[in-house]
Length: 504
Image 1: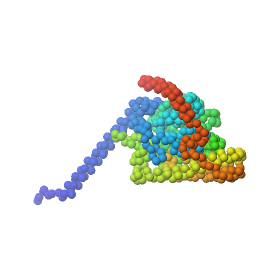
Image 2: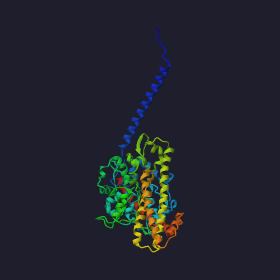
Image 3: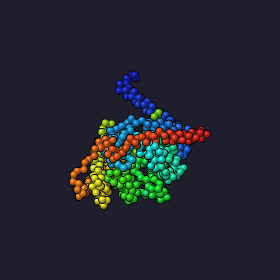
Image 4: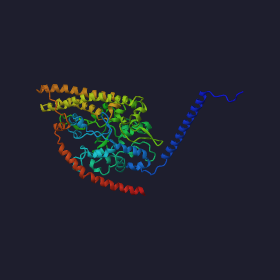
């Protein structure tokens, strides 16, 4: 019998490919083992013992270099999407109608899109909304305005007490609040667990009958953002802290735009009186968290960090990127983790929602401008407070709903249906106010249409409401030239002292 029977060719090929598959799988196993060893070594070898309220991000970066280096990338402001991004954008120049809508309030002077956490200190120092009279060291804004800008805040709250920190004028702590938003704002220095460092959020949960300590880890990945990305006001009638600008969230009745309006009406709160119409206006801040809660991503359990701080791998180690920015700057690492559509399709999907919301928002703004100008005409024609009170209530409601939708970053994508509903409420309230104004003006002998102002540019709009911008800029530059260097010198002396203590 012939024992050298030839194998069939397909058997040889099967053995070859089988061997290749086994080698490939063994390679993956070896790589996985190597990566796990690297991760273990990385996690359990901190270089420094970080103290409870250490505000300096660079010190935390000694123990967590990858997270820190990724965070430094937030200094890059080159990304700009169709409507937002992290570039420095003059919102008033883009939309001069807002100058009219905020006439009589600091936002009519200066309103730039936020460049991100890295610039939190720089931008609040430079804005025209702080430090007036601009050349003085004691402006009209309270210390509370620093609350969300720095990890120095938890340190100062611990030293001075919460109400003690909120008390006083903004400029009085300019040499203390110097480190931009960072690690200590969200992390426990020993365990690195996420934690809440701003009492306003804890107090807001308590007002709703909830315990924030019961939040899951996934919920905390949004709640640390909710410490600041929310609607708030300064309560100057808080028991035990009267005449202190105590940071408070209007969440007693819930987190919707309607429940916040109910809350503010119940305490008769007003941010400012409109310069033209004399409307008692509510200025929305940035209810990002509240509107996120009404969207599809929150409904599916997606946290803020999932999209704005995605997981990345580097050198075999998986960690959370701290380059906090728009998901559109990294669609493959954010949107496409869950969605299988192409980048082009996903981007088109986002822009479609933003465009539709912007279309109705622009129409609402035009109606609001008209209502303020027509209300001014009614006052000039001899209207009395009894005539105007129900009209101004409508305008107040309309502006609140518009501002609530407008002030939120990314709301037209986070929750396009809810934002559209809110803007719809604004338009409805505004149209009712304008019908009432038309009847009143007619009764006062004004039967001609009130002309729409020429506010085609930011400069024209500011001139229309009587702002002397050249003087404001001059005063601010003097403030930056003379006061800020003194703050920085004192801060350097303090941190040099900390450095010597750390070296011991």
